[in-house]
Length: 151
Image (cartoon, rainbow, N blue to C red; front, top):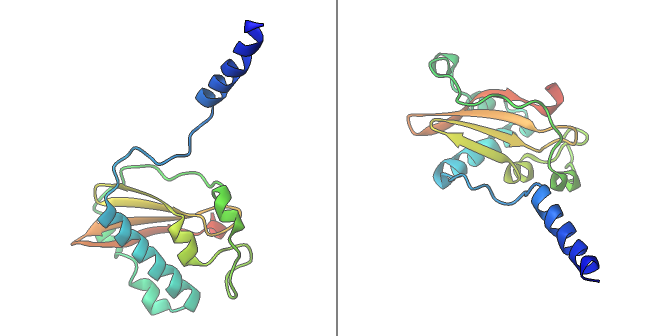
């Protein structure tokens, strides 16, 4: 009889240990950098939706600035967005299956390392947009962009 009571506890322990945890990362987050990066990404998506080309150019550093440094991490292969983002409904004017930028940016996975940052923005159903940022002179701007539909 003791063996029968032991198995459910053992199975529960095994499931707990073997399952990946999606809890908060234990990596320290620079809140100021995270907020600045998300604000820049939101502004970029607003200008993209408005098709404001001159404003879009202001979200990027010129190549001569970006070419001086190598990013500290590799680009990720395309992957599907987190399950939560699949419930986001596209607004009028957005590409079919793609969410509004402001909502997607709030769900973005942002990784900052030194003067570099990469944001994986779950805007479209099939994949996330990949935005690379470089901090220079106290400002975060993009140096690379891979939209989900183009990856």
